[in-house]
Length: 502
Image (cartoon, rainbow, N blue to C red; front, top):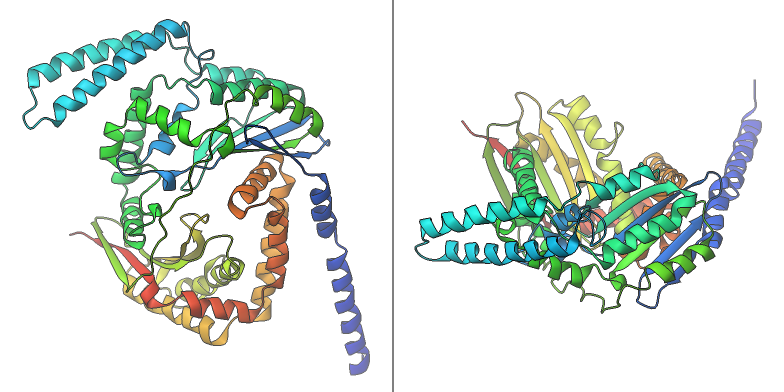
């Protein structure tokens, strides 16, 4: 039988071995290598390129990060960032048209006629006959304009050259454009993408606007869960523009014009507001030379003014109820600071331990033990994290149970965190998972390009992506306890729920 002294000695040896492995692990080598290999170049017009060479395979991923999202929208044009994402694939003065000069004249006629229709509809007593005549002419012009359009030419050109990752998406904070191509097509990407930002043509605008309106109608207005989220954010953020959804309000979408889109593009999609991440089989110096040639021709302009409005202190708990014939759902959101704040990593740890994964506290108590919910989770940095945001808690009550029961148990788990903090096993599991998740994302060229641009724009420097890992490693149980007591207070929260409408 092993003696206690020998057992203690073996445990100590094992512990020291773990420390050595962790300290000199491939993770540390990977992060150090990335720091030394990433190269940055800023064009004279302010556009930034961040390049990481990876020569394992003859492919390269491109990520254009426009520092503009729904949070930059003002009243009357909500949803315009998302609409512009749709319009990005419609082509330019060269791509997507059979004859741009003739097409442009018809587009101008359409814009002028649409303005007349808008004005007539805004009259106290619109003339129905006049409206009918104008709308018939409008449809005739739309059909005429379509004759000059080459459908999906941008997509077809990219796909022919081997791009299987053509994509774009809009969030509260950003609009992002994604491509993945063979490494011998870098100059092709430069030519195509610079043309998109230099000579965009927002053709088929009214058709695409109708598509977005239908997207809102089907994806939000007919979905009780989405209705709840829209009303919830409108209540939680009374001042900051996180209060409106990315898809925008229907009345704004209905009245946005092509001129609105052109003006918005000029303001927010200039080179000083664009950051490009390129990861893959490239030579950074060659990339920068090509960038100077292709993107350097885009005229410079001032970087848009930062958002002025900050969400003020909340004075008391807010509640939102959506009545619908739907499964009840309960949401709780507590105001928390932005991604750059020193407390963000500790809040991330807290949200993970309380409600992320099968072993989380909420899943163990609400779903497995008490069986009051079929699902219970938490989320950090919601709806986005460039500005002060929310830490959220969700619960779907099980049959025979209520949102109130779920809320009571969630509150109990939050109080436990405040009083007892977390145990070492929970904290270690979070740290390992968070670090592994970041490392896994770094393995993919496309996801690495996304990480580089996000860190540079939102955190302030691409290097902070790696420093975040050090911050995660440094989190203590006391840090988690402190942020729970600081931010998870009833005065600071909004509660939303779906109540079954009989």
